Amino acid sequence: MGGILEIQPWITLRGASSSSDPIIQEISDWANTSDYRTAAIQSEILQVTGCTLSLQIADSASGEWETIESWTDGVSVAETLYLSRELDHGSPNRLANFMRWKIDRTSNNWETCFRFNGVFK
Image 1: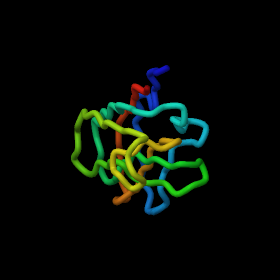
Image 2 (image 1 turned 180 degrees about the horizontal axis):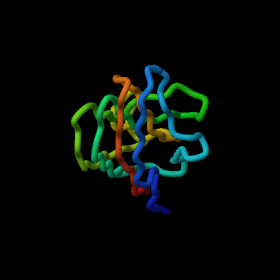
Image 3 (image 1 turned 135 degrees about the vertical axis):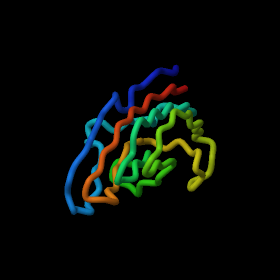
Image 4 (image 1 turned 90 degrees about the horizontal axis):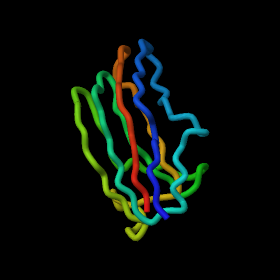
């Protein structure tokens, strides 16, 4: 059976820091997609300034994370990503067991505003 999952409701994050450590979605908020074969992920990005926003997948919560899409400075976009578990490891449209977002800061002053929703089957 399928369902709709709010991966990340609207959020605005900003900072002023010289740290290069990434900001990663809280583990308790990662999407567990292990019960699904396909997904349509709606990405709504209002702003990305001084950072790179990425959507990532992994086969296990402690495993290696792959970036399936990323957005950089100046982007404002709404798009849908179609993912399938049937695709090979390393495919940009492969659906894995877990999904999260990550921010890599490229400037001391950074800001982003986004949300992710998914329809899963």
